[in-house]
Amino acid sequence: MSIDWAAFTPWQSLLGGALIGLAAVVLLVVNGRVFGISGILTTSLFGGGQRSWRIAALIGVLVSPWVYMALGGQMPQAHPRAISVLIIAGLLVGFGSALGSGCTSGHGVCGISRLSGRSMIATLSFMITGFATVYLFRHLLGII
Image 1 (tube, helix red, strand yellow):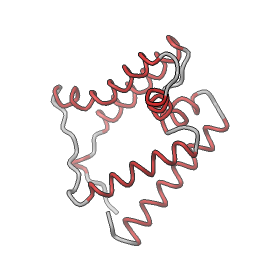
Image 2: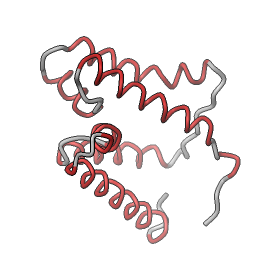
Image 3: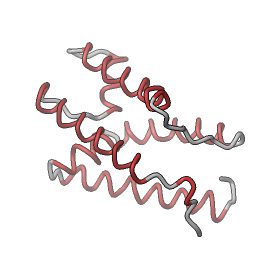
């Protein structure tokens, strides 16, 4: 296994992580809400109070890649055959988020920072499942 040094972006990754953390802190301080994207999406689509801030958060998530590109950043290009894999993976992540009562932003970013035992177990489960999936599909099956 080797690192693709041309795609290694520590400064962009650090800035992105800091901005996600800042957004989570601002939402918690201003609104008293956890920045869990799956919960925000679900309550925006299927009802729930205070819909305006949820819609604004979702718009921010959807618009941020274009803002990044407008500032000179480049988005990674997906391999053409991987598009179907990405769609299936996205659906599985959505199912897993519902099954785990939250996603990596809710459990991993916000829950762990609040020392939630449930979030620590959920995040550990996400990570182990992700490692096992990559190992299975990339190294054993050679699909991606």
